[in-house]
Image (cartoon, rainbow, N blue to C red; front, top):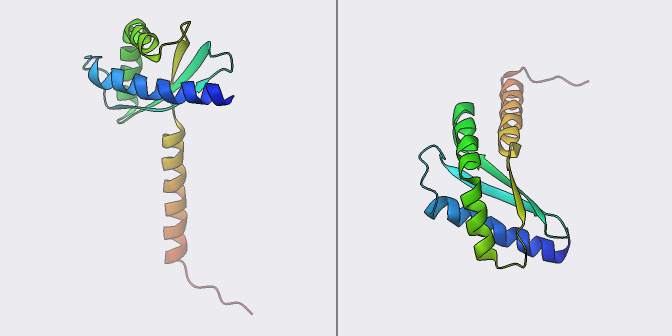
Length: 123
């Protein structure tokens, strides 16, 4: 991304986070965090990555709530970012945290298994 795209992405991340916390009063939204935003160099499209605390049902419920409130979120974000044209927003569940936790769990099991194993006798 260009420097300008990075700046717009970070500003959108802050604005959308604030909108979700202060403006969207949907009880199905859950505990959501905007993890990052990627904006195209022409600033026309943005992928908004979010994570949700909870199980898969809570994540699906939050995705539906975002979808139902998308027009309102876009309207407020465009109004606040103060650009010549509206950036098209697409929300995507960020599964990198889940992936990291899964890897951490696997590594912990390996470590526990190695700690319980008999010491090797070399040579």
